[in-house]
Amino acid sequence: MSQPSDIFSRLFGDSLITPIKHHMEVCNQTAETLKPFFSALLEHDYERTRHP
Image (tube, rainbow, N blue to C red):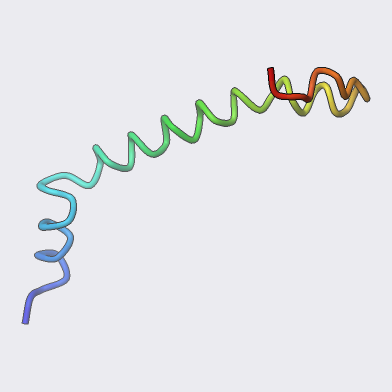
């Protein structure tokens, strides 16, 4: 039976940091994209909430 660390090494390669860092960057980009949307909602400016 494989050790848990062997399974993770096969899934993620030598480093878990790289995929986690990429995931965090994508999450940050998404959050930044949503800031204007939520600002518009709070200001009741529903025209700005529509997709361009």
